[in-house]
Image 1 (cartoon, rainbow, N blue to C red):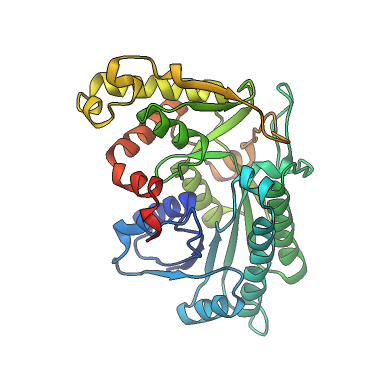
Image 2: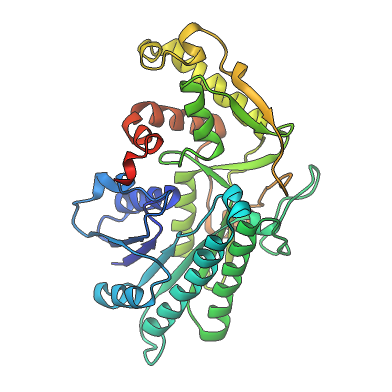
Length: 358
């Protein structure tokens, strides 16, 4: 039996991981630590809020005393570290929060884990899993091979640079102090609970409300999309079967340009309006309410500074060593995502009107 401390689990990927882990390993206890910044939402965990073996603590990973108390009080033996500032545009306009959370916070968590698990006590089985991003590797041209775990880091945004620094700290704590760690660098996630500022949920909700779909530049930037539950399955494989000190890329083998991603999303939403009659009543401002193609809302806007051209990870290592395979293709995953948003309107309406913070 494990007792997990999952940081940042009121956010998108962390919440999905907690739901996945509770379903897959119901005997394990989970303590969630989240600072509930703008993307943190208690509603993401409402389905398991009162379940046995689940605890939620509001707090920061920069609070060293709080971390040590949680680790000791709950007998934490596994840390899964999602907590991070992660929006590239926000990192460009306000990088300080990214340095504080992603670098200082990760280091604080590592210090406490070392103190509790290693200092003076060498007999505690433990695991510290760090969740990172493919953006630490920089950018690729259209014909470059995908990023490997051995690709040199070349971050191009304050967000990516802060995540690169945290990756190096995790590696250093393994090689210097013997902390049992692993790191995963994932491609772009999508799925339930995705905060509406990101490309797919932003465009989905804009379609429903008849608003423009903003596409940076020509929209030819390429991303490798990973359904969020497939990401959780990859982390599961690493925690249970991965080698200590190793890094594993988790990708969806699913490269799409941004413009093609949005056009596929438009097609799926249009098909939903054709199949589900009450959508025209629920969302009268959507093009689908009058049988107009959703892609008519696409609008090209000025590209953002330092916009990376292409991300793509080679997931061959985790696939060969740990027998990992993503289960969803992009169409099936997007279809599930659209259904989730259509069936959970109160969740995203509370975010749009700000009431989720109350």
